[in-house]
Length: 466
Image (cartoon, rainbow, N blue to C red; front, side):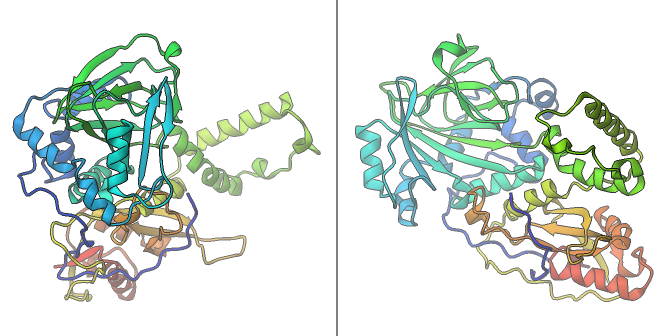
């Protein structure tokens, strides 16, 4: 993902709460079967009756989980999330092949794409669905359907990772995709009809890439079952799977909710190692000595140089545990830049405005939207000299656009937030404890610094003035 410039501060809020993004489509008014009181409560209700403790101990990144619930009220709720007929209205909003919708079918173990060019028209989708027995894949419904926005925003808070979704609609007696595995953790919920699933042992556990697997390589299924409305299936990264809609039944609609793409220890190490080397090289002259002549011209790194690099890595490992922080800004920043904004039940303006109470030195303040904020330390992006000072960057997702969520629109993504001198970190930690803090008690040297910190956070809608 692209590197952004320093954050700007122009967000606004009203009456201590945030106005919400404009909604595009209403969902069913039926009582939700999920618990939205907190991110943890939402995930607990999503995998019920399995407990969170059992899930992470026995299933997460280890093996599939099938939950067949035979619960009519739960089935009714999930059926309300998305129906094939919803595409009729969605097409009127302006959907495009490839970007918003894919039409495909699995023929002789291979995926055949049946997309047309340009804008999607529902009558053509219906024709391909009925006559060509094609699967219709609708990308990222949270952009249009409020309940998916509501679910995925909470799950992004829970996992601390981007959460995407796709809807798959497959006619009876047909299969859309060949056997394959994904590079994401996937939660699958059946919405309409039934789907026949077959799962296979991974050839690449916790895979980092999507891949199609030929039938002759995957062996016999480890699981073979039917998903019905309200049922849930969890698949760890790398789980090989294929699914078809049984003949003689109505079409199938299911949603895949996916997360943890490029969110491994390896990714974090790649993200943080450069900052660690940069810092330690300032302290250790050995890391600043030059490489042997023409080393970059060798086809392979010589054995002696490999030993040298191994020694440097051991030095980094020894120094790491003694350091207070890592310069791991890119992963944090990318997450907050591309995630969903907070969900709100009421239709409102896209413009956020600060509350009526302006923070003064006598005010007491409290952090809000903590699940939508990250703090990171990085070099001052305004300095061009070699001795760059470190700054504290406070990034947030309050002004993100759900219309572009998980769509790869890097040009549309903007960084929102404020930056402070490193000396402000202790004051920020006070607020991040969640308690109400009098501005006078912020751990800063002068009243001017305390007021400026509060006003900057208030302008970005990140604090309430009590």
